[in-house]
Length: 271
Ligand SMILES: NC(=O)c1ccc[n+]([C@@H]2O[C@H](COP(=O)([O-])OP(=O)(O)OC[C@H]3O[C@@H](n4cnc5c(N)ncnc54)[C@H](O)[C@@H]3O)[C@@H](O)[C@H]2O)c1
Image (cartoon, rainbow, N blue to C red; front, side, top):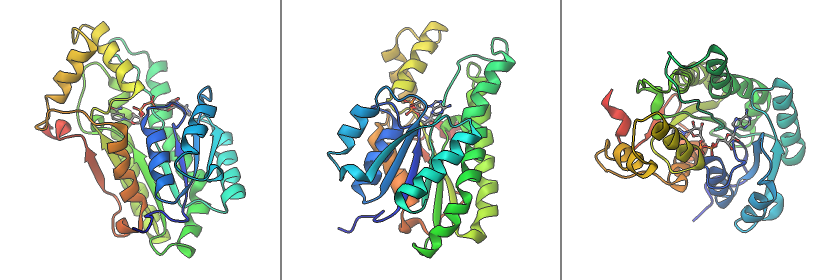
């Protein structure tokens, strides 16, 4: 079977932690023939990630760049280096995200701004920085460029104990829709994926915070309880989630823009 992303160039943020969704997207893209720049502001796992991904694709198909997604200067450098290395940008995946677990009563304005800076503002900066290159994608691929924002079921579910995360992810959804309308005539599609419970380091830490806040007895109990909110009663693995990003980046999705893929086992469909 033909590779679904053959020859495309992708930037994937938040790919600095093994076992997370960003690294799973990089791996899935490499398997489908893309060349990938994975970025993250932490680079302590850089060599291990590079070595593992070299087992699924030629070593020169993957580059890792240190990158703070809240910095315009960093975005300009990442966009420039990606084009210098691979000759363009066809796919931008805004995947980096953070959570600070507190409701309005206990969340400081500073913490709210920190979360919003990564989960919302960085999407804006990233799209702006990569736009000139993404506009050129249609000259290589009829479906044009693709931007995929990794949001969350938090975009459409309220929470009493996670104010910054839910409001920033909800704002990310409207940003995605606005960008889809603005960039459509430039042949750039903009879509979002809304993961539910996906077992990564971030989610394990988040569940541990919920235990500290007294919402659950243990991390395992939290996983079972949240998974049980959906009809399937299961959680997702990062590799499952990555499939949605492959589809949206591929030519198969050339008529798909402004779409929200609910990769949440219907846990988030109640609101
Ligand atoms: N795991 C889940 O259940 C779940 C559910 C819904 C949404 N999501 C979303 O999926 C995305 C990936 O989450 P994950 O579970 O793989 O978590 P993760 O913490 O493993 O991955 C997030 C990555 O973003 C990086 N990052 C954070 N701030 C950054 C910054 N300023 N600059 C650059 N990199 C930065 C982190 O270092 C980390 O590697 C996030 O946007 C998250 O909100 C995850």
